[in-house]
Image (cartoon, rainbow, N blue to C red; front, side):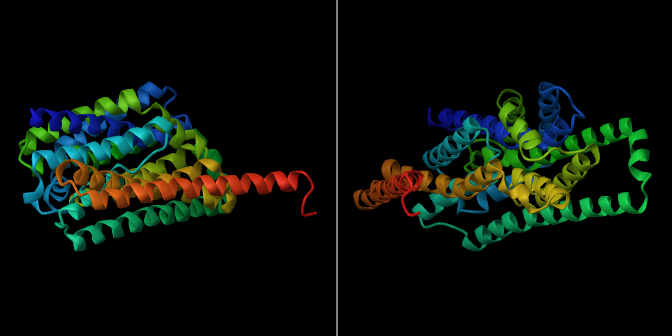
Length: 360
């Protein structure tokens, strides 16, 4: 019975990953108008992620399954807790339409279990976190530099832009191809986040788990990815066909390399960082003033910690009951909520004071 529960939660997680992460891969193509229909873009994502999962997710599966915590702690009960923590966090992100890093959530949930059982490969976790920072930074830098190079070419050869217009059909095709490549890279990297713990615990055989994970990743992209593709494609910055191709190529290349090395990386951070790099080169730092970017950055920071805390708390409540630790967790939660509420009250009171002419 527990085996079926674990598999069900894992496949639900795969659907949420498809909606949150994989759907963002076709954001540039959709946002630039290369693909007019949202459903068309999502169906292309579905095909790409399935192919990527089936063909190239093996190394990341090994990392997620047995590379972060000792394999002997991955009982069915622990796997259920890990997958539940990750699923709850991703469902919240999908609900508000934020392109959340599924790798951060999955790794955070696994790390929470490792901390609870004092069975964590800390050096491996630190290396993964380093890649979480370095690869999006590289994506931002590449996006910035390539956009600056494009601007330099436009200034040096004024006819370049007009020439590009004659190649519009070819540019549309290029953008769709690079977006599809990025969807393939999503399948390679993200399917493991859902089925890696199941495979690591021996609940599913590797090939069966990968095919199931890829299938449900694709299904989730189609039915849950609408808000995320809208956010990544149109609410951060508008992209031309060349800019969209640049973003997708950067994202696909970096994620495929990371997948071949076996590192679960934040796909949506990489894509969004490339978009920000292009937008910053074109419009300057004022792009960062947009509320949607601030919201994304907040969720990126909170998501792995939230998944870790949920996973750790569930283990201490359900599997290793410890009233003292539970009391600490509840106290931290109450104090955090209280501090946020107090901050909002003070800020509201101060704004009211100034609105009424106080302090002038």
